[in-house]
Every structure is written in C-alpha cells, then in structure tokens.
Amino acid sequence: MDADAEVEVSRPPAPDGIVMGRDGMAALVDVLIRRGYTVIGPTVRDGAIVLAELSSADELPYGWGVELEAGRYRLRERPDGAAFANAAGPQSWKSFLHPARVREWSADRAEGALVFSADRAEPPRYAFLGVRPCDLRAIAVQDRVLTGGAHHDPRYERRRSGALLIVVECTEPGATCFCVSMGTGPAAGPGYDLVMTEVADEDGHRFWVRSGSREGAEILAELPARPADPETRETAHANVDTAAERMGRTMPEADLRELMAGTLDAPRWDDVAGRCLTCGNCTMVCPTCFCTTTEDVTDLTGDHAERWRLWDSCFDLDFSRLHGGPVRSSARSRYRQWMTHKLGTWYDQFGSSGCVGCGRCIVWCPVGIDITEEAAALHDWTRSGKPASAPESP
Ligand code: SF4
Ligand code: SF4
Image 1 (cartoon, helix red, strand yellow):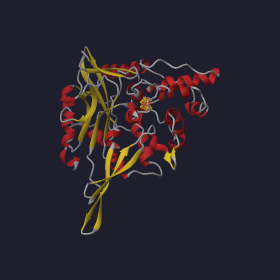
Image 2 (cartoon, protein in one colour):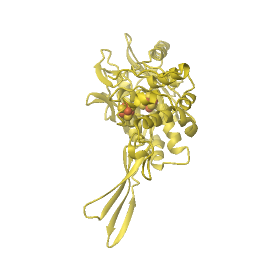
Image 3 (spheres, helix red, strand yellow):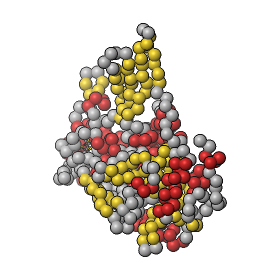
Image 4 (cartoon, helix red, strand yellow):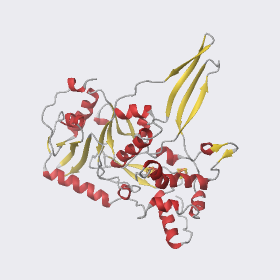
C-alpha cells in the first residue's frame, strides 16, 4: 500500500512533539489501520495484559495496572485510567517477529513424485503500539542475532523490516524491573518511529508524542493534537525520572561478563539447581531468547509432510543432545548455561548483554528464581569466598 498516496499531512512536524488525549490515541490506531498496518498492542485478556491485534484504541488496558513479584503476576485497577502505567506482560514482541511456530516447508506426494513447497507467505505489516524501552533494546538485540551475523533469518528480516515501532516510556516500573541497571530504560533509546510518555494528573489524561522517523512524523501530523506545552513535557520527564528511582530490582554493580566467567564453580549453582524445575518458562518469556528447533510431521497416509520451526529452550534435555546423550544433563549445568550466556558469553557472540532487565523471567518463574538475586549471590561469593545462602522460594 502506498501510504503517501492515502494520507494527507495536515501540518508541519512539531519539533517538540504534540500532546494528545484519548481521542488522539483512538485516531492513532485508526490511522495505522488505514495505512495498512496490523496494530498489535497491550490489552487485558485472561487475567493479564497481553499483546494482541487491536481494532480500536478502546481495547488498550485503560485503568489497569499490574502487581509483579517473583513468581507472581496480578492485575489491579487504577483510578487514573492510565493505559500504559503497567510493566511488561508475559509476551514480548518476539511472539510476532520471531513466532513460536513457523511452517518452513511442506511436501506432497503427487503421481509418484515428491513436490516440495517453501512457505513464503508475506507476513503482516505490523505496527507495535506500546513497546517499552527495554523491549526496544530487546528488538535491537534480536536484530543483531537474527540479521546481523552469519546466521541470517530472512523470515525475521521480512517481519522486522515492515514493522513500525511506537514506544511508550515507562512511568510505573514493576517490582521486578531492573532496566536502569542494564542501561535500557525507563527513557526510550534510539530506534523508534514514535515515542510517547503518558501523563495522568489534575490537568487531564494525555500523551506527549514525538517522532523518530519520517513515517512517524507523517502519522503524528494526522492526529488531533496540540503542540507540546512545557508543563506537560516537564511532568513527563519528571515521571520517567521518578520511574528510574523506583526500579524494583537492580543488578549488582559489577562487570557481569567477568562475574559469570569467574564463578563457574560457585556453589550457588547447586543451590539454584535445587530450586529450578528446568521448565524453560524463563526462556519462553525472555524477549531476547531466540533458540529454535525443527520438527517434521506427516499425515497418516504418508502423502503429506511438513517441517516446522519451533521455539526451543536450553533447559530442555534434548537441546544439548549429541551422540550418546545430553551434554548438559543436570539442572545445575542448564541454569548456569542460560544465565552465563545471558550475562556473559552473549557479549562474545553479539557484542552486548543478552539481558535487557525486563524482569519477565523473574515474574513467570513458577518458583520465583530471580536472576538479579542469583547474580548478587555470585557477586557476594566472589567477594567473600564463601557460598551464599539460598532465598526461600515463594
Ligand atoms: S533474562 Fe530475564 S530480565 Fe533479562 S531480558 Fe530475559 S526475561 Fe528479561
Ligand atoms: S529458572 Fe524458573 S522459569 Fe527458568 S527453568 Fe528454572 S524454574 Fe523454570
């Protein structure tokens, strides 16, 4: 679709951005749909704020917040009606850019021959509404992993290249968030098309919106809004600054890569292995985990076969199976692999941390294992030379 032909830009770009109310948010979703985007954003479903296709801004989680703790997620109502005053939910944008199940090809037997068909369906053109700064960084991490190196994933690239990113800065961090110590939030870094900061106070419920790309500026110009006033900008900045001071968790102030490399024999790994169920939840919810496996399926007649790519987890025994059995057969070795990769060897492979501090692995771990607590215990051990004791599981 030729967006330029369909959309009339009504005013020049506002360098300081615009301020819009809920009507502006409604118009934003309508404009995106009119431009041919499939709009994905947060909405309340099944007792959580999930990411799903939106047909209207009314589906945003207005008036909903969340209470997060290790192994615990609860919705709570908010009297201020804010839509984005809630921390990351169970899904991340990788569910759309790097989906959990993708059919790679199928094969059919026809007149004695096998005919193979690659699955090359065009993906939707996504507009992601409500990307958090930590998740913006996670998308950049997956960009590097899946398109920046030797193992290029054309499916990811097709989905990613058409995606419009609308970031919402965080004003209400969860008790499990630690983006500040990972340098990924709560203010937005580069890479967005639009960025907004929500303000809900005695002067009303409004969004301060700025553009980061030409398309973002064109969209902005179509919204019912007024130029950004200094008071709203100051309040928005103050809300983000306050959020930075209210992070629920923090990583120890240490060179994490060095810490991981220097603690491979720490007794803490036995300790965490005694609690870890090796369920793999942490890898499923992590916005940067990218590992996949393949699975072949056939129908009962044997005339049709398909190859599927599925998310995999380094907590699965088969993940490290070579001849004779798995290389990492113990929970200790699997948890250690996951954490030392995230915080240590990821730098060697991809030049950055594999953790962006979103806290999802803490919330969705059924026994409440907390990566910041484990890192702190390892840090204490290196300083004291003594084994750190285990926290009580919830
Ligand atoms: S390791 Fe945990 S906190 Fe870090 S990015 Fe993954 S899910 Fe988020
Ligand atoms: S750390 Fe928690 S979520 Fe991850 S595999 Fe172990 S029990 Fe499951």
